[in-house]
Image (cartoon, rainbow, N blue to C red; front, side, top):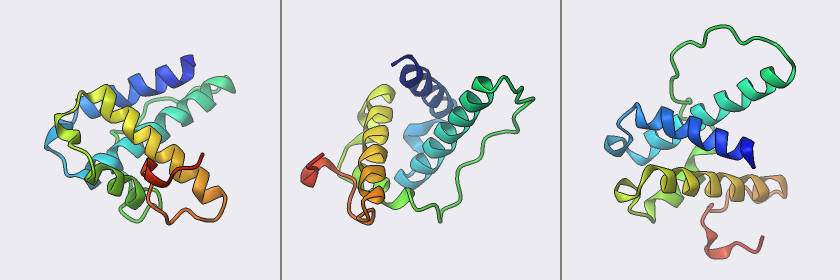
Length: 119
C-alpha cells in the first residue's frame, strides 16, 4: 500500500507543477503516464540499489502510446477539471488498471470505464 501511496503522491506532485486543470484530456493522460512510468522506474532502480543520477525534465509520452486513448475516453465522461487532484489521479489509475487487465486478456481496445467492468 505504501508504494501505491508514494506513486500517487509522485504523480500528483508532477501534475500539480504543470497546471493540470488547463490541459486537454489527452495532454493530462500523456503527462500522467510519463510521471507514473518515471516513478516506477525509480522504484525499480531503488530496489536494485542502483542510483538513477539526475532525471531530465519530464516530457509527456508520445501520442501513439497504446494506453492513451482508452484513458482519455474515461476522462471524457467525467468533469475531471473540477475534481480535486487526488481524485483525478485515482480515476486515471483506475482506468489504466482496467485497461491493463483487459489488454492482458486480448480486449484492450475496449473503453476503460467501469460501465462494463466485470473485474
